[in-house]
Length: 372
Image (tube, rainbow, N blue to C red):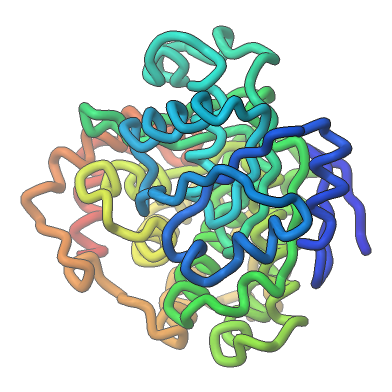
């Protein structure tokens, strides 16, 4: 069993789900509230996770991209249950929703008041309900992150960020990801790869985060095809879960144009899968940023044991193809008519500020066209 304390405590091992009762007791949760989605509930993972806790009130209506209305519904259920903490069991959307519920249930006002764009972090207090995160996918890294991304009623996808939103503990059990279909394993895995690449390329100075990002990237790229092809390969599953966790650990450096665009696209079309969007956008963004990141691109090639002249964008596109993921935005039903709105939204996204190359609305439209 490996115990890590970096951003937060992490319990990482096949079978780590059995640690839930002791973690709940350690954080003095007497009336835990479960946040999940219907797919996880149908798979029986809730019963497995909470067997030793007895009945726990549950909210299982998390949408693919968490929304303000879902947060409000879950917060009402949390209060009605007189709950004192949350166990989030699911992927990044579930964990992000749980953080927002932990905030909304303990703070007055609207979620928009707490968004980064509203300078809301200073309004978030230590009174946030405690969250224990149990990821069932290997991609988002939200289990070790301070952020919650929520689509508001006005269709903006905003980031709410505070150290008080950081889960008190992440229980990472690679076995929980074995039931994911290949397409979801691939899409979430490419999400982790995008996180590691964009965090590493961020111009902010943070050498420890850079090292974590490169280690996560190497783990993910070297094992993602095995994880997709052989769901029961626990070594591959463990490597992918660690890569996703490492992607989350280096979030503090910021991300870039891939995420600025994918956040804006998900606000336009909430059913789009975030990780798959990142996978499609990544090659074009890598081409756009290359002139500003020559030394860092060499370091990525070295970490991935690629020849010095290999084009990183082509290498990512080739990996994407080997996983059977959609290669173009049009394959997901995205319409060109939204590009102007998406480009405008990307300019106001938190990730825009840490792209290594200054990006205009016209640049974003060109990246979208190249990815179409």
